[in-house]
Structures are given as C-alpha cells and as structure tokens.
Length: 149
Image (cartoon, rainbow, N blue to C red; front, side, top):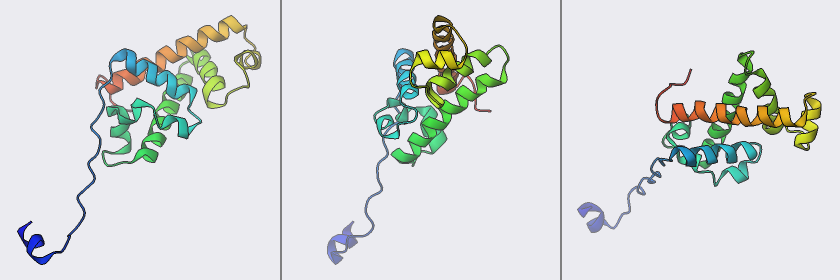
C-alpha cells in the first residue's frame, strides 16, 4: 500500500467479493423449488430465486460463478431430479406429470392430463407427489445427507 501511495499507481483492482451461501429453512427451500419448477424455462425469472445462493447450486456452478452459470446449474439440477424419477417404474407416473407441467409444458394442466390420458384429479395427485419427491431429493443434497451421483 505504501508503494502505491508513493508511486501513485493503482495496481490490480480488488477481487470481487462473492455473496455468501444462503442457508434456507426447509419450508423456504420447498417454496424456492416450487418457484424454480414454475419458471424452469424462464431464466430471467429465475434470477430472483434464492436457490441461486444455496449450497446445492453454488457447489454445482462453482464458488466463483456468476448469475448466468448459477441459473444454468439450477435448471440442470432441477431437470436431473425430474429425470431421475423416470428410472423407477413406481415413479414413472410422477415423472410424466412433472415433465408435462415443467419440462415440456402443455398449454394447461387439463391438456397435460389429457395428453397423459389421465383424469385431471389423478394428474394433479401425481404432480403434487412428484414435486414433493424432487423437493425431498434436492433438500437431502442441500443439507449433505446425500451426495450427487
């Protein structure tokens, strides 16, 4: 500092301070996952999602990552969690409801139910169970109970 003061040179700019990891309660995390699902295909809306500062996303994108990389990481984590349900015959119905609602959404939930040849009430039940299942999966990874495969 003394050398810069005497010589008048500036030197390199200070390193950017990254935001600290945000610790969410389980209800806050669940709400943020639901919001991420609703806006999965809208990166500009995902900019405000608190999960961008969660340990889960920061670990995936890298501590020095910026907002665009974290949005991509959040989308990828959400998509991978949905896709993991397709591997189990028992969870395939949950995967299909999530896929038609968030990944390749139908115009309405009624039309998604029709595309899947399900009564609307059954579709809604599968969708709710699917959201709960992926929220639990991601929460377990967030708190470190499970590592990524």
